[in-house]
Length: 142
Length: 154
Image (cartoon, rainbow over all chains, first blue to last red; front, side):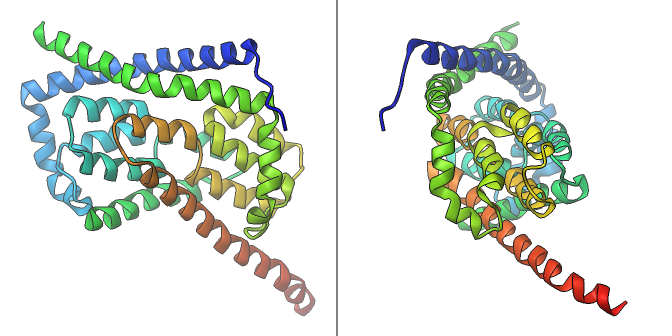
């Protein structure tokens, strides 16, 4: 089969990509600014200390809690912004990526699942459960 | 003030890191869609989906979700389900699959941009979704097979 490619498609794709990039900038830039301030103020160390024992279940440092929370509640771009700002090692980034793959943008996506005919009482525990389980398995392996 | 600058620069670096992967991918995805590649792929994958209880109609919203994600794909997915092209059992299987496994292009690109190997991004989600849906389809099938007998007894 011949693949049809014209400038219109490239333009549409680029436009969508650019639109995503602007949305992304609106989330990532404020996120990294907030994280930088949190880190400098010492507040991050306190939060990190509180979360450390829970995060160690997944082989992660306490700092990584901030990545999980922002990914679960906001989206993957926010989580990536935090990863970049915290300069987490690749091992932790990989574990977080798998965990967040299963559960992210939950506030929005749960509502979409509901509209698509699924029950929240099934989908939410399924996604969070898969995320935590994957974290424990991968945390032990890596 | 220095802090704000530092945060801003890191943020912009992060945006650039992600954008240079996501924009080219969006172009590729647009070309794939304009050529009807999704429908073709759906036909090729039909057998894999039949094992988890999805017909060709039922598999299409899943393929859309896998490539476009829940947010971008929601319009197509929801209208498709509301049109009644799939059974109630299929709706439940589709729901579980797309909850665990969607936007594999975009989500994978985001984390590849920060260095995560692609296997970690694709295999766990696809495998978990497939296994969960396989189990669910067995349970649903078992229920369908057993419900008439229950009705006759009562």
